[in-house]
Image 1 (tube, rainbow, N blue to C red):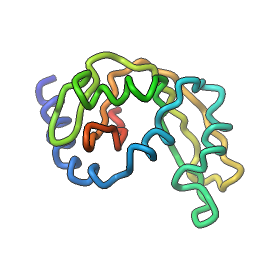
Image 2 (cartoon, one colour):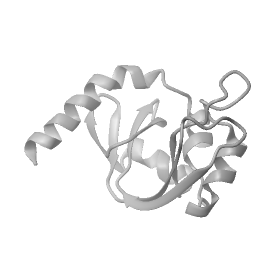
Image 3 (cartoon, rainbow, N blue to C red):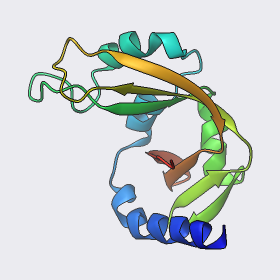
Image 4 (cartoon, helix red, strand yellow):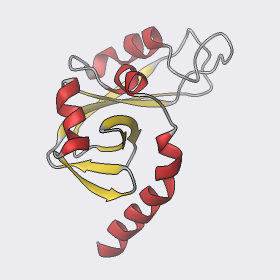
Length: 140
């Protein structure tokens, strides 16, 4: 278990510099926070949001995206005390959040993207910049 945690921390530290430039708080909110998200709504939401990997210049469908079912403030708090730093600008929440992960086939072409959703309770891992979330880190 210690080796696994050390490996996770090392990976997160190495990625932290890249995460700072990953996206803005506004982008993060659009991509990852939706308090009303449900498993059955993945296809509609993913197609409406036209997330990277989708659109006029890239016709492939985004393979995966996770939505945090919470308020903006609750997610922000992970960067300012409701999360513990695990390296660089990476924080793990002190309590679990309900999240919905939408998975699709990257070989599909927009606008015919189909997604299946799965809801979980997990401690989220996010990258923060200026006390705001800017990157959702997938931990499998």
